[in-house]
Length: 425
Image (cartoon, rainbow, N blue to C red; front, top):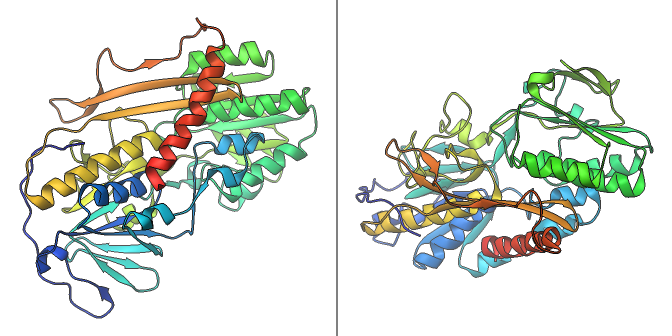
């Protein structure tokens, strides 16, 4: 993976003060010191590939949790055909690759002095910084919703305890109850995710609580892989799922956790289980460090994912403004490789070519029914990431081969095995 031509940036003086771990490595004549914040698909991939491309680099990965639980496949935990352990990944593979994994939470970034401060006061110096903080949920974006309210109306949009809470609520839901999903407007993490969740929840209800219904209240007028999902809903769960678009009143106006009701232009609806997915923005450290634009996301140079707000800083994954590239694990993994190659080239003072960008998105409707879309991207003359014409593809609406949907379900499982191994080792 290569990047566009950039000149080598000059180093600054040594970091001063007690508690600073190291000084910028280039000032010591070393290969370079890189700090990566966040061990998700973007951050972990960047760290691994930095060491793969230049083993002499000093790479430190900061992550507040002992393990990373993936949002991809978390819908299957909700539906009951995967366990939380199946989507939980440790960092031993990163350590074996030569990455220094530091447990801690980054609370401040000094982009002038090139220092990252952790909550315990530790300071890490860097030549290059990679910020891969994922998303922050904007609870205030849904009137009546809050972090406390999410204990009654789970979002389950950060995998972990919320995933298990939504699963328990689904198990306790009476047959004949209504499952309401409130979908946010664009942009948000994993565009097809809410509709995959609806699908696998419908599969669970069909097999366990067949009198139940699902109502989707959507802020949007269209969604990712819409034709494929809706065709699957009609064939697999006839009469169970109702989707209300934004123009038809689907945008949520408020929620009331006490009465378990949702108010929208469609009316006031009461649910046995209500899954509220609020609007999102870049993770907190990106905001604290001043890396976000007014829309709450991080502008970048699309050829290298270098921050448009600070020198020597790169943004990877969901937090970045990446044009046509969706906020997905696949996108973050690809961007991590682009950033790793860019940093290695820049630190070595070498010219490089433009990035190769793509996204592969698999979704399950049932454990044996898969659909997918693949897109390839390029940076246009206006320095915006756009979809490459006549590239990529999407599952056919009507299968043309025997067991085609089942094969795609198998591809989904194998994709997950492949990308998680590539990311965490």
